[in-house]
Structures are given as structure tokens and as C-alpha cells.
Length: 111
Picture 1 (cartoon, helix red, strand yellow):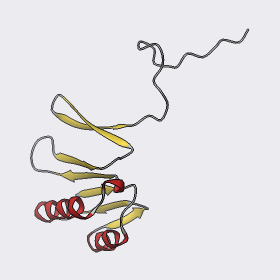
Picture 2 (cartoon, rainbow, N blue to C red; picture 1 turned 45 degrees about the vertical axis):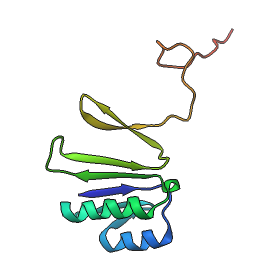
Picture 3 (cartoon, helix red, strand yellow; picture 1 turned 60 degrees about the vertical axis):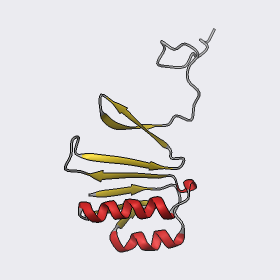
Picture 4 (spheres, helix red, strand yellow; picture 1 turned 180 degrees about the vertical axis):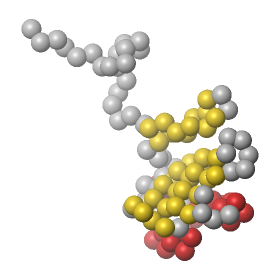
């Protein structure tokens, strides 16, 4: 299975994607293509999409851990690796709290 999430795609690429994928939601494409075709699709996207497209590509794989994650451009998510396992972290729009040991931002107490 191949899932592509994009911020924005060029019209020519979007039209080509509709040949292989269903689009259940705007800029979210899902397909059950074989691994060999999935690699060609990933290569096509990397070649024809500008960095502003903000692609996040999830591909099922026969190798451990069972999937691959690719990113291109500025996405709303960040790919990180923990103990060899690729994971996706949602980028926060808010600034981090002043106290690094605190999980919640400091809020003034009412008097």
C-alpha cells in the first residue's frame, strides 16, 4: 500500500496520481500498487514535485519495520527515527514552554 499526503501538488502531477490512486480527501492519495510500481511512483513524485509540495509518502515494505516513510519539502510533520524505527511527529505551531521539565505552558494564576 502506498499513501501520499501533500500540501499542494502541481495540476499535471495530480492528474497523473489519479491514474494510480483514489483521493479520499483533498491532497491525500491511497493506492494498493505493487512494490515495484510504488518505487517508480515515489521516484516520479521526487522528480516532478517542487519542494513547496510538502510531500509525506508512506509505503508498505517487506523489510523491517514493514514500512518506509519519505518526505519532500516543508511538510506539517517531521520524520524522526527512534531505535531504528521511523516515526512521524506533528510539528507544533506553539513555542515550547519556558520550563523544559514542564509539559504545560506556564499560565498566570488568578488572584
